[in-house]
Structures are given as structure tokens and as C-alpha cells.
Length: 273
Ligand code: ARG
Image (cartoon, rainbow, N blue to C red; front, side):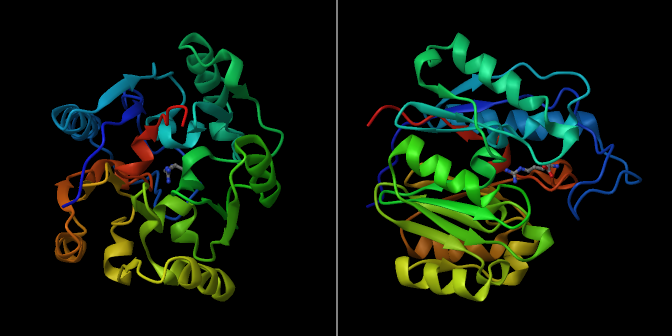
């Protein structure tokens, strides 16, 4: 009963991935990272998208930017319009121009905006049929929410994140059906008033447990039917199946060491509407 629609994604291979600094509670530079395994896990994710019929575009990784594998943070593309990113931490600032250059070279030149305010791309912007949901509290500025609303011409709903483990919206909330307004989220990541907003807008949302949130289970990607999510989030599979989705568990354990998983590695290029 659920229908998958073909998607176009932008990904960046983890050629220079490591945990060499700490900008979120998941990152511990003293813990070893298996780079070969990280690459293997990322390739597996890329291949699964392609096997499901999706297009995966590739961004060239740059030495010295270990978090560039988290391509979702580099821009937000809605209706073929590209809002570039402006990173909160100096360690990641140079990723933004690399994304802008990719879009300019790939046919988006007339539709690219260099942002005025701090926003970390799809890390903090999630697109449903009716709204763009926008996170703030740790990374993106609330001013970027207004900027996005004006640029995209879609209503933007500001949500406040309050738990440092869920520093980006996409660590706490995931869009399951973007042709409708169907999401899953972990209420504990949000301020009390943002919880009220979410409950009002999404009364039928799938609510994740703290256990599934704590293994980055909300950092998932849905094509309307297949939901690729961290293998560790076993508790989400049954509720997803009950709603007619097909959960696709993927092992992203090495990337979890930097605080990212499936969604963080995947930027969606949404075509003109
Ligand atoms: N280490 C990265 C950071 O803290 C991880 C980013 C994960 N990406 C995401 N979309 N949540 O910025």
C-alpha cells in the first residue's frame, strides 16, 4: 500500500573520515575509528539506494574535512532551489563552498542562495508536504528559519532542540511520507512547547523510544515505502512495518562515532515541483 518514489541523493565518500575534534557528545577523538569499515558501510548505503532505483550523485571529498561525509549538512534543496549552508563550527566551514560549487557545476547555478544566517542544511531542515520543519538550539540560527521561509516560499515551523545528543533536527525526527505529513520523532529531544507544536501538527506520528533515539534510529531516510535506518534501532522496525513501511536496516556503526548515521550521509535533491 505504500508507494516508493524515485529520489535523487547527494553523497560524499568518507575518504578522509576520522574523529579528530569534538563538536557533539558522540565524538571522542581518543576512540579509534576503522576507516576501511566506515567506507564499506557508506558504500553499502550508496549501493542500497541504487538497488532501490534511486540516483546517487557524488561530491568529491576534501582532505582536512573529516565530517564532509555528512552531506546532508551542506545544503537544502526544495523545488530545485538550493539554500547553501553556513556552519556553526569553524572545523566545518569549508564544506559549505564545496557544496555551492557542486550545485553551480550541476545545473543549479540560477537557483543557488548563499545564506546569510547559520544553517546546517538538512541537518536542521526536514521537508513534509505542508511545511519545512526547522531545528534550532545547537546549530542552525532561528534567523535561518525565516531566511528559508522567504527563499523557498514554504511555511517553516521552528522547533527547539534541548538535548545535546540530538543537536540536529535529523537526529530526533524523520519524515516518513513527504507526500503527506507523516513523521517519526523522539519527543524527549524537544522543548515542551515544541512538543506541543509537533503533537498538534502530527497527531498520528510514530513516537520513538529513548532507546531507539539513543542509537540514532531517527536518522533515517524514507522514499515513501522503504525506510533505511540504523541496524541498531531494532525497536522501530515493527512499528514501521505496522504502518506499511519496509524497514531496511543498515550498519553505520563507524559513522555513529562522529554523531551521524543514514540521513546525515544523504542529502536529498528535490526537483522543481
Ligand atoms: N560530526 C558532525 C557534526 O557534529 C556530524 C554531523 C551529522 N549530520 C547530521 N545531519 N546530523 O557536525
